[in-house]
Image (cartoon, rainbow, N blue to C red; front, side, top):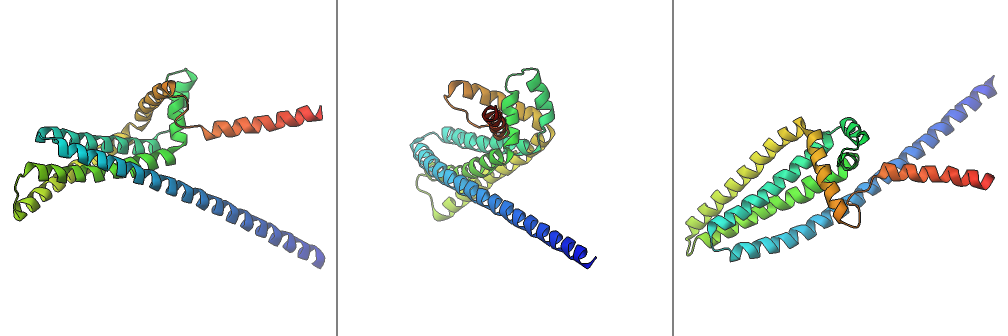
Length: 234
């Protein structure tokens, strides 16, 4: 009886040890994937911010009409708000209605499902990369417009103009994103369906897919292995 209890305790401790090692392995793999994803997103944000900053500042300096520069500023703010809407909608959208559309061969439904399945990547790109870059660019464009508007500004006038432009830009960005979040929460599935249609149109033009479906590729790899085993056995 003592040996049976000892054996059971030993088996239980071994199972706990194996479970603990498996959990540590999974946690380490998740952390490594998160680090690679964070490095890729940060590098992408750095490149996009540098390129777009040079382009926007050089373009804003060449704009002589203040209205044209203001339109450029509003376009940059609108891009940030739109991508923020997509980033919020993709985390809330459900796959069920999209699967029903895909079963009926609705154009863009499969691409929308692909976006929802890769929600963390899409949200990181839309909210972190595009959102932050557009916010930085809007501030830089606003300051450049103030400098171009004032021919020979005084120190007080320059500080007042930059402060008002920065506050106005921040109000537009924050207010637009606040409205966009409500819209994204209420109509997330419909928004992702329209984004999927746009993505399907782009995939028709490009020679490669913008976003692959990991689950579909995994199932394909899983289907291939048993076929090979059956063929080898026969």
